[in-house]
View 1 (cartoon, helix red, strand yellow):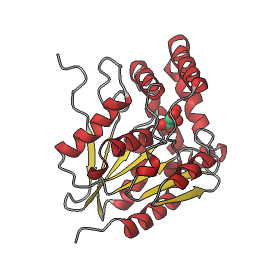
View 2 (tube, protein in one colour; view 1 turned 45 degrees about the vertical axis):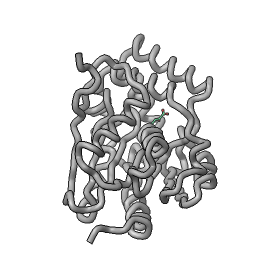
View 3 (cartoon, rainbow, N blue to C red; view 1 turned 90 degrees about the horizontal axis):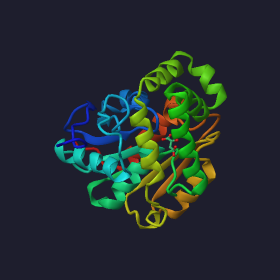
Length: 267
Ligand code: MLT
C-alpha cells in the first residue's frame, strides 16, 4: 500500500534553464502565498512552488505526517525535477522544512531565504497550544480554527488593506481538510530543533521578519541571523507574520537584491 508517497502537485514558472528557487509556504496556507514573488522573479529564475502534504491541492492521505516527511518531499522534488543547487525559500512552517532540508544536505543548495520563522522546536507551551488547536478543530470545526489562526497571522491594518486578497486567502484555507491541518499541527509539534545547526551553515542566508509578527517576533530572527556566518536580516515595517503577502513590493526588492549579490545567475 502506498499511502503517503503519492505525488505532490508542483507549480513551476519560468525557464528551466535559469537558477531554480523553491518556495515553501506557511501553515495553514498554500503555494498561492508566494504568487507575488514568483510573478516578479520568474523572468530571471526558475520558480517552483508546491502545496505541503495535507494542505492546498496536495494529498491528505492518512493525515499522519512528520517534519522529516515534509523534508523528504522537498528533497524528492529537487531530485525528480532535476533542480541544480536551488535556492530554498520558506515562510514559518516552510522555514522549518527549509532549515531541516539544509541541515540534512546543505550541498544541494546555493542559498536559503527564511521569512517569519524560527529554529527552536516547540516548547511545552507551544505543544499545549497545538493540542488545543486539534481540540478546537474536533469540537468546533476547521472554520473556527482557521479563521482565528489566520487573522492572528496578519497585522490588523494589513487585513483591511489586502481586502479581497485576504478574503481569497482565508477562503482557500477554509476548504482544507481537518485531517490535513491536524496532521501539520502534529508534525510541527514533533519537529527537531535546528538552532545548533545555524552556526554551521555555510551558504548565504537572508532572513526577513514583519515588524508586527506575533508568531515569530523579530528578536528571535535577529538572534538566528547573529548565529549564521553569512547572513543578513531585514525587518518589514507595519506588517505581521505573512510578509510576502502583506508587503510584496518590499519583500520582492529584498529578495531580488539578495539573489543578485549572492547567487550567480546562469548565463
Ligand atoms: C506558520 O505560519 O507556518 C505557522 O505559524 C507556524 C507555526 O504555527 O509554528
